[in-house]
Length: 329
Ligand SMILES: *Cc1c(COP(=O)(O)O)cnc(C)c1O
Image (tube, rainbow, N blue to C red; front, side, top):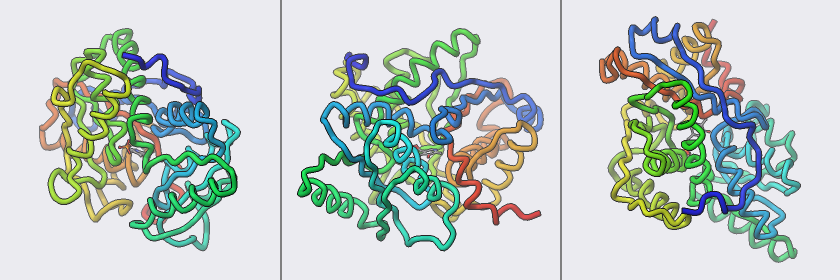
C-alpha cells in the first residue's frame, strides 16, 4: 500500500473534532449519537471536499499544472472549496456551474466570486464538455489546466477519506467508542468509497451507511456501479490487496424528497432541531437531508436505542444563506 507516498498538500487542521450530541439523543429517545465535525476543516468555511483536494491539488502541483477546472451546481460546496484551495496553492480556478447567473449572489456562489474564481454558466448535461472546452482553450494558450470531476470523486480525491478513516480510527480508540454505524450524506461517491476502503484497510468494525442525496440504487445511473468503479481505480492507485468485491456499499435512498437541492420538511426540521438543541449548523442540500434521514431511521427503530451512531458532518453550512426563505418565522 502506498498512501503515504502520494502527493498531498496540507489544507486541514486535522484531526477534526468529535462531539457527542446528548440533547439530540435524549430528544429522540434514541441511540448515542456522535458527530465528526468535517464542517470544521477550516479553510474557506470547511467541508468534506477539502480532504479530497489535499490529494487532488498535490497531484496537480506534481504535474506542474497552473489552473484548476471543476464543476457543480450553483450552491456547490465542492466548487467553493476548490476556489479557495486554488488561492492557497497559488493556482487559477475556473468553475463551470449549471444554471444561469443569479440576480443576487449568495451562499457558495458569492464565496466563489470572492475567492477570485472565473465562472462559466451552462446546462447541467453540458458541464463536462464545457470543462473540456476550457481546458483546450487554456492548453492552446500554453497554460496547464487540471480538470477535477464533479465532487472531486475519483481515485485521487477518494484517498482523502481513506486518510480520514485512519484519523478517525485513532480518535475512536482514544474515546473508547465503537460506532455501529457511520452515517453521512453521499452524492458523487468519493467520500463513501474512501470511508469504505479505509474501514477495510484499517479494520474498523462499523457499518458505513450513506444516505443518498440524489442517487438511486437502480436505473440508468444506478449508484452502486459508480461506487465500485471509483473504488476499483482507488484500490489500484494505492496498490492495496483488498478486492473491490470485499467492499460493502450500504446505501439508503429513501430521502430523495422532491429532488437534488430542493429541501422540504425533513431538512428544515433537522436543521432547526440541530441548531436549537446542539448549536450545530447543517446545510439544506446535503447534511440537513442526511441528518433528517438519520432522525427518521431512529424513529422507525432501524437504529436501536442501545446502538451508537457516528454522524459525519460533511459541511455545506454556507448553503443556509442561499435558502433563507425556507425558514418561516
Ligand atoms: C459533496 C458533499 C457531500 C457528498 O460527498 P460525495 O463525496 O460527493 O459523495 C456531502 N455533503 C456535503 C456538504 C457536500 O458538499
